[in-house]
Length: 209
Image (tube, rainbow, N blue to C red; front, top):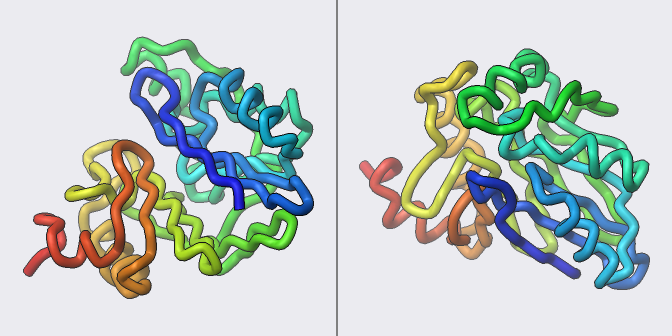
């Protein structure tokens, strides 16, 4: 499996390009900005994007999605519970002093238990409301890797004070759906360094006790 993780945009969102080395099919997760970097990585590995997956509808994760969609023709996938947040991208942009990316058109809603397949690789969608109502994680079970969006970080959890956020829901999502995964599962958060489920079980101050 090809997996490149790189920060994009002013908030340094972790964007992932994940590809099948045999079929050269790939997905891009959270292309929030700097689409030219995404395209360069795709070209380096000779990958063809089959799906664009967005973990939640905050501008730093979805801001470049329509541009990438136009360049690749790949459908855009996002949980429908974040539809209202998508309509507030202009407001989000004004909060952060960023350019409004314009209207984002979602091709398919990702629900809990759905599969995302590209080549021989399959990811399972885990709906983890709390940071936003539509937040999702993507579990690549065969690779023991979880793309966690802004639900779980190294030593922290996603903020819940923005529209659609809920502390009770994010704690339920993390304890009920993420911490039950095998300890060796690698966690790729939406920002910052990678971690593991075991490390967060044992050391995350928000989750202990």
